Amino acid sequence: MRKTILIALMATVTFMASSQTFIRLSVGGNSMTATLADNEATRELAALLEKGDITIRMSDYGGFEKVGALPQSFSAADTRITTVPGDIMLYMGNQMVIFYGSNTWSYTPLGKIDGATAETIRKFLGNGDITLTLSLDPTTAVETVGQD
Image (cartoon, rainbow, N blue to C red; front, side):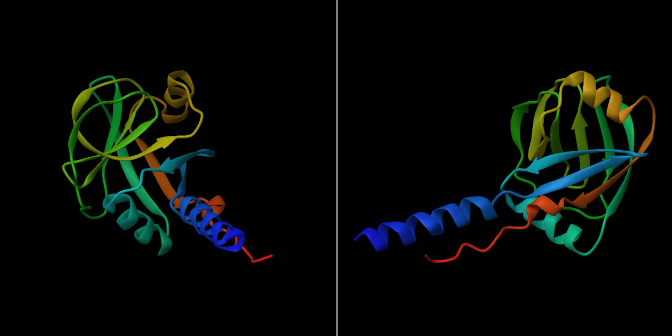
């Protein structure tokens, strides 16, 4: 019985760890990490990032976000959401939006910038147009759980 519970617990921990995917966002010489949401769009994004980095040209919009075209469309599952600074959303299936303010609209969540405040995000993203590079973060790798 104990062995069965231990195996089930190890499987749960492995599943939970493997569902966490992290990406690195880079602008100029600065970078931040983000934790991806668990949905079809982010699985497609992660699969694309496994092939290499993605570069997105982003512009300010509305005084609360940066938006830019992704290299392809992703599966959208839009719901009405009120965003907060640090949210990363998919808009219209092929646009990435990073929020440094707040907005209420229909988006598909892509993720959230880790540990950032509105101020640090604004500083990171800067004013005007930027070139953002997305890459898989090395912390995404899941270590193998062995049986003791």
